[in-house]
Image (tube, rainbow, N blue to C red; front, side, top):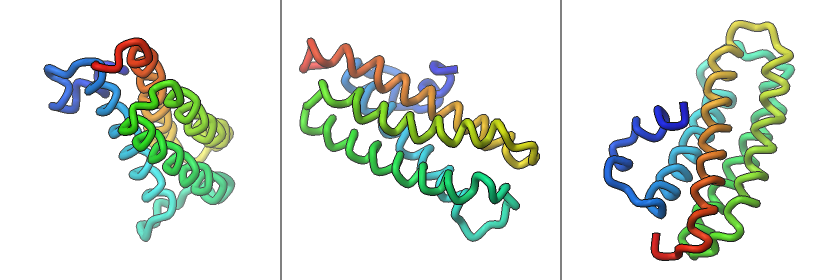
Length: 137
């Protein structure tokens, strides 16, 4: 599933590890924003109120963490990427637990997208470990 998420982006075809990390961060950030927009947007998906508000806060925090991850990456501070992405992943896992406890049909799609986002965070963590010793990508 990780490879499917990454290969879906045309930028990955000839990317080195530095570029793959950058793309994974970008994909995670954009997916988090999309999910947040759906949770808080004008469109009424009739999301279960038991997770809509708390997850909106969690996703807002995850977006902030992923935005900071982008900045950390651009500054070349690769040692801090995993820690920052872990914070975003923790926020996402909190929502995963709420989605799992919901029996409302609309949570199925959110569960899937939440899992994809978790996987993207894992890709960022894994690929960033290789950047620590190779700052040239």
